[in-house]
Image (cartoon, rainbow, N blue to C red; front, top):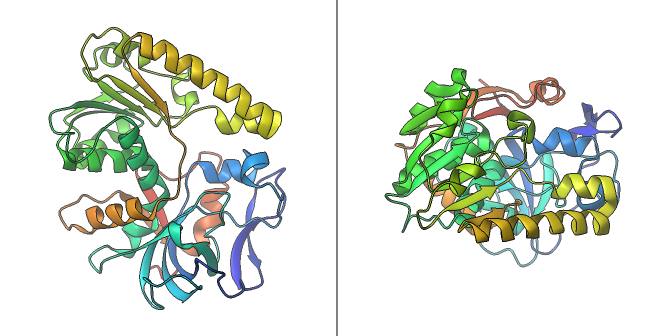
Length: 344
């Protein structure tokens, strides 16, 4: 079968390859046929060995990347009773679980959720991994559909995949949102529902952000420090302040120091940061992606609503995937760029 693989992790170059078809799905697994997929920022990093002591313990090569997809069920393993062959599903899988850049692939049942006809293939192709990360960050900040209305939220990195989805969901929940993005992506975040927009290069505007909850989805290199905007919360005395960061040093520490040393180092950093934040009255959390079929199903429902703005900025044929993946500028932005098997 056709797949896109990494053969040499020293370069991390993605290439088309012929691979054996997967075996029949094991217990609690689902076999899936790819319809479309996307690139997440973690994918090119994992391709070069990022987090390998934790994420690719067997050092498997060729490595099939890919964290999300829209796919069709081919076959279900023993114990899977709620899915049927031919059903479309939304897919999100951690690097430890398996990749989606293949014509056919097997994943645990927890990595998929059935989707309605009103959710387009293109939207579903880029929704899973970034969407779960966004939902889990919102939850870590204490936000939900039941309590978000009236809360003031700042999303740093709002025009990326995770930020765009978090913006759409938080807006749906009724939060008041300041979106931090580059000048060229200001219109994008306004279209998604931002109440205010800030160019991250405008130091005065950044210092004047009015929010009690901050979600940081921007890479450290975009802001030159690990916890941008945390000082804003320290200067406030309002209740309910929270800071959530998806850009944390867990995987980089594991890459450099191995599982035990890396987790010990990053765990120590996390404990110190949480303690310092707690003393200032701030709820501080790091978020790492975790598979969750119920949250996937919720995402599918939200984005199946025809009134929900799209988070897809562009769509290409699947054969264009290697060129985009290997581009040093990173995944297409704003929002999500998707790669479809049957592109128009």
